[in-house]
Length: 220
Image (cartoon, rainbow, N blue to C red):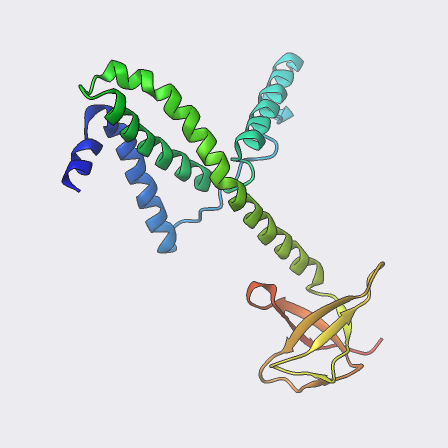
């Protein structure tokens, strides 16, 4: 442990160690609820026409730069996950890669040699971050899809199709343009149970959208 600490504060490693320390402090603040980690890239990066009034060439350059930036984000993975998640993995891999590469190829601790090792470290860290954040991106996408589904269901009215719907069990059928949507529902703990065929309105989503809370609605 002492040797690791000594290697972490060597001149060629110190900057990355400071960055990693900032990342750790950031996530501690997130865990404490002081910060929100969901920082994403703006979709209109570099395409704001008001920022380049009177210059079509400048506007075109901004659109080109923004498009290139977003394309890089899709390729490297930092547009599919919250930006701080991507940066955290990137800093972690660069810190670890720098330790390993300098241990193997830079025993004298030369700053010049460390600078030469920075390029392969950067490339390797980008690849590793892309691979690690790929399943994370799918997780965030699934969470986003679940949130979108909840937003589509909340506020809609359906018919109770289970024997009854109470605070522990129930099913509601919502008519859609295609196949009717069947969802698991619950009533508020202090509400009277609803019977089969009663009309009910979805008022909110339960934990992880496993079920939805409903209330009685006037019959159509």
